[in-house]
Image (cartoon, rainbow, N blue to C red; front, side):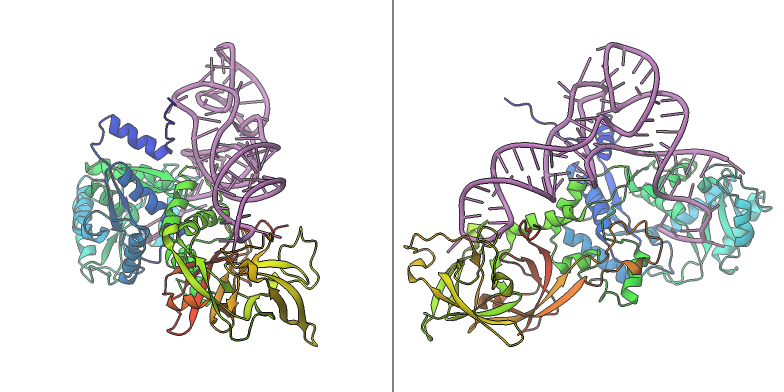
Amino acid sequence: MEEPKKESLNFIKQIIEKDLEDGKHASIQTRFPPEPNGYLHIGHAKAICLNFGLAEKYNGKCNLRFDDTNPEKEKTEYVDSIKKDITWLGFDWEGDARYSSDYFDELYTMAVKLIEKSAAYIDDLPAEEFNALRGTPNEPGKPSPYRSRSIEENLDLFKRMKAGEFENGERVLRAKIDLSSPNMHMRDPIIYRIKHATHHRTGDTWCIYPTYDFAHGQSDSIEKVTHSLCTLEFEVHRPLYSWLIKELGIYPSEQTEFARLNLEYTIVSKRKLRELVEGNHVTGWDDPRMPTLSGIRRRGYTSEAIRNFADIIGVVKRNSMTDVALLEHSVREDLNKKANRVFGILDPIKLIITNWPEEKEEMMMAKNNPEDGSAGTREMPFTRELYIDRGDFKEDPPSPKKWYRLGPDREVRLKFGYIIKCTGFKKGDDGVIEEIYAEYDPDTRSGQDTSGKKVKGTLGWVSVTYAIGAEVRMYDRLFTTANMNTVDDDFKNHLNPDSLKINSKVVLEPSLKKAKVGDSFQFERIGYFRVDEDSTEDHLTFNRTVTLRDNWAKK
RNA sequence: UGGCCUAUGGUGUAACUGGCAACACGUCUGGUUUUGGUCCAGAAGAGUCCAGGUUCGAGCCCUGGUAGGCCAACCA
């Protein structure tokens, strides 16, 4: 017997398994806490797969909680899109979606408790003076003159803040911790601020709102989150996270940080993505070039591919730059199993079978997916005039060993059809080839080939008589620079001018008439394509998801 | 004149917690193939940031460096 290979655990799984073994927790509770101020992107997918995946693996639970403590930025529109994206990825959150705003009352009570413990105070300092007193990482902060107010005065002021007696920015509530801490977040951080703004859920009930630091950890605690996972930049917040929980004597959730996803040629800053949308550099949040989940989905990536991708990139504490090849491999792997094969000709040129009678038609049997027998077969009409791809013909091709395709006197198989031999071509005055002529060998019908001929090249084709036209949007990376984190000029200078090429002269085999929005196909020998929502009843539009691997084109 | 985190092939991660560095992607060979796809077989590619130390033995531990990331929004 072979030793069962021990599954290697990432550092978070190790922590969880230890906690479970030690009996620290009977089961785990995680949460995915997006701020509803934008669309989810591929980086969020990593966090979603982590949190929901962990709950799945360890029979725990994962909440969806909207971190909505800043009314000026948050909108219900985003709540809806976020839910949709998580569902698309195939995850279910525990119970109803939660909101930090659900806990505003409780949070307020906690703040009062802190004041009563003399662990928080109201500061009247204007922002400028406030920041000056805070010091720098190298110099300790100095106390505000308001730091030593009485509990009664603080309580009264806080109540009046809540009652709306003050203007935005006039006063804040600060936790009283340690002004000389080398960690800036411990230098009496602001925990409540005045914002006369309408909240997407609580409306005008409140004019004071807790800051991230005062809302996040306590919300975790209220939900009895055992493992609160967030990205590396929150590492410095952890002492504050723990301090508040301890000071308030509430359920001790624990924060653990992991590295966020960095993907080559990709940007995941919400601000920058918004800039692309608003500057019309892309067509919208769901432009198939966008790294948003809505964009990726529209492009044709499957949720299985994304989940697999999240799986193979792993979870660690070190920053890295992920090769896009990993993502592309994930989709190809998934689509290879699922997508039916069809013939699509991106750059059509007429091929005329001169020894094929004008009116003769034959139906050819084509396999839908060689990887999946249950995908069945379909019929394709074979006629005298066909379209093949211009790139499959060369007037003066290299040696047959280097060129498997068509050229004068060369033979190829038209897949699922006959072997043909090129007998000539017609060139226009402008030097452009207009038509290719060939003769077919009647003994080579696919499946009934008695000729014994072997040809190296196999081409896709579409009957001119039955072809349907379509538009294909060929997408490429949005940026030309691999590491977009380190560009110091305007990131828009790095936009790839060729990130979208529209090809509207594409012809497709007639079976595609039945294609529906959202369907993915493999155009044989070319790539994977998804039917876009811009398609109409009688005109299909496809997005190129990704090309096929092509070992030959590289040489 | 600070604090915290991190460092393993080209890329992403492993290494049963001290036992001669593994997997995936990518690259290159060859085979199969009615997709130059898939699949199959194989190869190259790191001696684990550097220097010391502990140890029979260090990628894992210790010390000191170096490099990168993060922290001074009433953002999250």
